[in-house]
Image (spheres, rainbow, N blue to C red):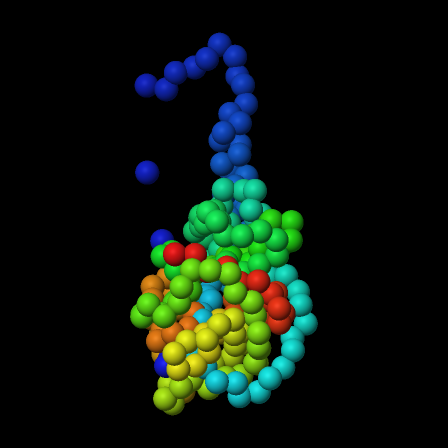
Length: 224
């Protein structure tokens, strides 16, 4: 912006190999999800961004939950990486990330979590935050949303802007990867590394999920 791929022996009796049964079942599930994801029947789970941007058109979107293939009680969420397949993703929330329904952004891990009021992770994905030290840890509140926004210094346009604080020159918020002169300013593969001049960039399906999840007044927790 401006400014989510290692002689058998026999036992006297034959017993079920539960670990192998479980592994086989997991493999079938992973294959099914991969096929569905590759065919476009499942949304992907990457991308969130915070950006310095000025509002272009304000709008209010309906609130709904994002896709989650596992809850916070499980050790992993699984998401489809680019261009296809499944990778295990650590979904452990950072310490001191607050409580209740909230959006959590971890600057060191370049990752966002959408957490429901029951403390279940609704969605988690990699993002690209700022290249500069413009955002401090703390608890913030969404104060403005725009479906469309324009970056400062003609740095491109973006969608699903969710603002929660102010920088030196403009607002800081979450949005999709900006487009400048018809091209995205970064690739999806670069999510997970700082790339922006102030905001937090997301893959568009994730940007839309956060937009729907976080109304004006929603809590945003930023951790170092």
